[in-house]
Length: 224
Image (cartoon, rainbow, N blue to C red; front, top):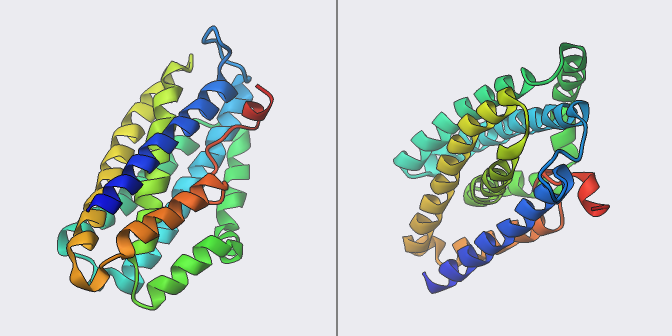
């Protein structure tokens, strides 16, 4: 467990980078919004698409290798799929009607988008080979953990509908993140998976660090 504890501590520290990017990208030092409302809602539209991407990824894991998961983890992931679909609906509703068609177009392209993502294809190959654990850790520990951290920074946006929506979504993301940690602990205690848990977490952290695991950062952060 010591190695895993070190990996988790490293991950928790790395979440500060996510918080800083969101804070610097969205807000001026005085707390006022750095971007326009239309830019913010367009960004939220892309996050809606991300939520549906998770639905497809998690569904693939469950369909191809759900029988390899502990029953309690399988139940949690199945519930999570419904949560992510609900998040898509919530976030899409925060985008002006005239822009929702752009979201729908990106949704229609998701299968092709995933097929071109090298990281996801590597994870999917592992799932098909009987190892669904890396894919779930990638989603739940890295993506959901970083999402929860970013959502904490969005609490200061001056729009009630966005704040209320993310308050609900953020609670779900924290719960999904805990599912990933629970899976990690189970892996560490399973003889047949000895050594894989920490190594898998390190790999997903590397993907998060190079920007291929998620797309939470805001371009303005690079200019701030």
